[in-house]
Length: 434
Image 1 (spheres, helix red, strand yellow):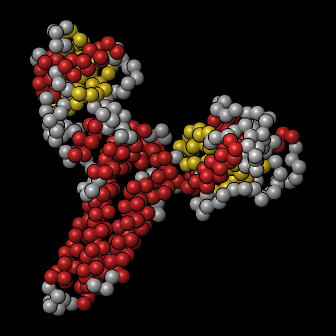
Image 2 (cartoon, rainbow, N blue to C red; image 1 turned 90 degrees about the vertical axis):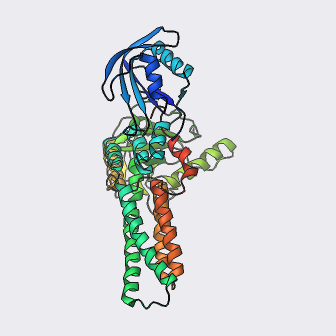
Image 3 (cartoon, one colour; image 1 turned 30 degrees about the vertical axis):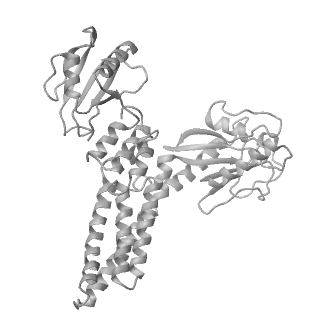
């Protein structure tokens, strides 16, 4: 809990007919009393005249008084449904500051909800994901996470680890007791099974991250092969400069769009070639780096040779594209190759279908996965590794230490253990007023 009272627009900074201003903290009731002289009954929207410190009328607004702890933040709170004019909002904000409140920082309302036990860290992250959702898949994934599935799963696993740890501690503290060997074998088998459960969820983690962050599709090829023209065609607008001069694209250009209900980030990269120009050399270096990180690579060329420079990884998919088909193909298409004219649009629908299918393959099952962020995956990897070491450990004290490591790793996922250093980073992603 904190002795500071904060406020912010929950409806965002854009101009709207009705602006919702949230207040949270111990002075909420006093501030409401000063604003409207006659506070409404708890949890009942009431029309009130709002006045500033000098008695001037600021607005006629719907007001809600929400006493804690049964509120979003767990604190005394209030909502002001104001007319959306800038003068009204500024006047009310100035009055609140004059009476001792302060503007909230990014994600501060949700951070207080977490600190006051109203939700765990995975649920808080899901709120941020829902606010930022651009696709139906992202919305569905965030809503599932908000339901607390990952938190409940971690809590159940930590309880199993607690029981296993108690068993190992008993062996350490009472070594003279001759416990049946089958009990120890059963405990080790449960550690092995729990590690397998963690690893099964890790298998879908990268797919879930692709749903949340988007699938990265990089367009690769030599200079003047039609990469920027294709980017413009796929984006449906002029986002990249198209020029007959080789090496025009120097930096990596990103375009976001939705294909098949999934978020996709297209990367227009510099043409891959040797160059004496230091600026173009840097562009090629950045292109190769981003190509290596991409989920899907569109490899463009005017000739059928497959000796194209494509940095392949085990998880990458490559779609081979023959460009400038409007000028005539110099050789038959290779199996799986797509003929394309980005200028006329020939073959673009075939390419979009191929990209959409690849995106679906890479993100399939991601909506149902419980691990949606890299930090979740890192914690599960650490916990699973500790359990595998516990299974292999010859003595109870070594097994007990590895079980503690696994417990701490799962506790970091939900925010129960050692998350202070990452709180600012997580809640800094939120918008003001949430």
